[in-house]
Length: 220
Image 1 (cartoon, rainbow, N blue to C red):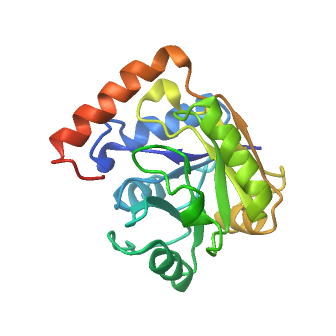
Image 2: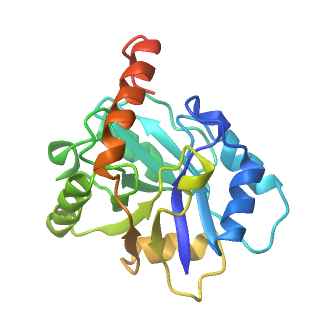
């Protein structure tokens, strides 16, 4: 079964996707699970959990800004504070019963990089991110071989058309968020999907730089 484990909503601060639209798109694409991982906010996740649906599993999630870069937490219900070290962030995620994931590890603006990942207690690495270059995703795959943890993938969608471009494959018997967590921790998942096209890189870079300047040169 397909799961897009990296989608943003209007609560991220850099996206205009409504939660209802995200869930509708997932149904249209037969994506059976999704995680809305807004930047330092659980609002998108909480709204998704409140909307009644039986055909899309909601895995609670949040993308946290640590000192070293972004860290995704799955299966947490309380906001993990931003601005902590990578180690402190992972420990807080685990203290809350969550799964700690290193997303887009080689992204210039917000990736953790090898030094912040190797030796840390990450439960998984995001090896396919549809907004990352093919080179970055290839490097993430090689990093997974070194770290030997779970594997996730996601679209990192900030627009409706991008949902499902990157995804995680789970066994078809998964029916709940707890099932998804178990499979990630037991390394029974596989990331697949597209990378950012070269033709998209200029507009993507310009958007990131302009948003970074507008935030006062501060990470989301």
